[in-house]
Length: 110
Length: 122
Image (tube, rainbow over all chains, first blue to last red):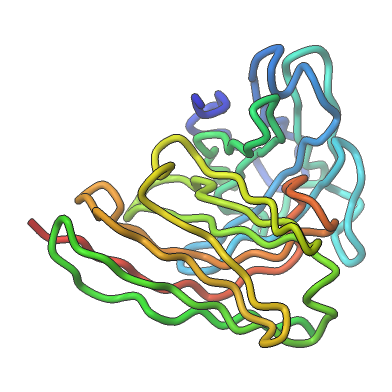
């Protein structure tokens, strides 16, 4: 089970829109709409931000949105704010009945 | 409010064993799948193992721990466990207990514990 591929870092200025990609294979991202995204601040547990590719849990800001095309899923953060600075991880179910995370992306707000 | 509290972490020598526990409260435990997710120091998240909610208790494991780790749950005690044997240095990590949003291991972890640190020394 290889980790999903994410960029190591993405940055943007306050108010800007950024997108984080998450690339898998035809056995994971490309096979199912079971992609989720997590936000993790330093020293804290992860927080679910997006599930089932596009759905936001209650309490998550509308500024966070998800999408998928083929083997690549994406998380978009619009109206970037200082509090969005964190690590972000994608995850998906796989054809091996396992789960796999991406390597993580560090978002910096300039 | 959902609350997950891990315990059982600590220092162990290579080849040794540890048993992690997770006490759950604030939700109907036997309705949801549960997983263990770990994070090595300074590294990313890695799913370790999951167990579904139903009576069969069907389990799944990452290849990295298959044959060495065993996940189990006791619905009467609202508890999740991870028995870790033949520990290796690369198992050193914070281990999180995570509640899934469904009764099978779909991977939508809507609640997490604070984690327990496992340190395997050589």
